[in-house]
Image (spheres, rainbow, N blue to C red):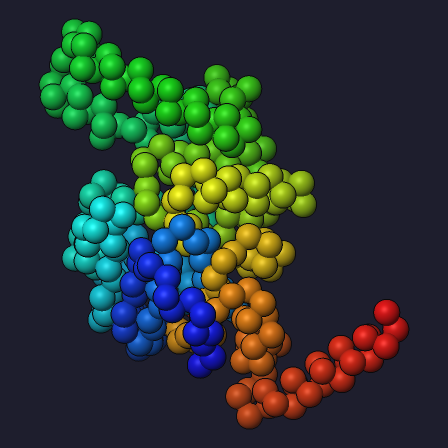
Length: 294
Ligand SMILES: Nc1ncnc2c1ncn2[C@@H]1O[C@H](COP(=O)(O)OP(=O)(O)OP(=O)(O)O)[C@@H](O)[C@H]1O
């Protein structure tokens, strides 16, 4: 497995160690370890069926791994073993939020209401888990005002403020994807996990997504972990790329390092290990040939 060493001095927010996940006779993830660094956009890539979504489901509590340890280290130093937490506590306590490959939102609620539902926990707490909200209790009124302000903030960021009162189901596909990200940001995550955020987007929507993710990284310092097939998105916005093939890590480093790694090139071309060198030689020949024409 190829690994670049320059990233090793960074501060990890997420450590996945010796993760394995078995489905009956299928070992979907086999002794997989990697780290995501604080403040980085980390991309998890690999061919279809490599195990990316399974890793995500283990991190976010949808699956309990067969083996392995997943440690989330918050900014303030507190650590959580995610494989031991139920999924709702992974969001609430560990501050890990996620979006899904298939968009999940309340399409009959307005765009703004979707972001308020995401802050339900905070509002319930302010109501003392009783009817204090109905009585206009000051602490509840304050929390409710703050929830609306936070929702508006993320609607601005996601370029959706003009659509705040429209039903979420009326938004275009690309706008729904941005709404999902805004909704996840309203839970105040330290780690935002995005499952194929660019899937089905046209080039203009893809560009808007890139800008949103880069602004989240720059303005909030939130770390982002994403699964993505669209290499233009991965190479444009990622600080760090981890590559999976058949449930095992085959490469780990910067986008430049990974895209030039022979194992990665071979995995994407679907060749056997013993053919890797041959494929690299062919690629070099082609690149050499192209170099002469520029
Ligand atoms: N719940 C499950 N039960 C049985 N097998 C599963 C389950 N979830 C995933 N798998 C299998 O585990 C392997 C990895 O699947 P996974 O969806 O994690 O891959 P992926 O890299 O996300 O693929 P894609 O890029 O196509 O979404 C596949 O062989 C898949 O069929």
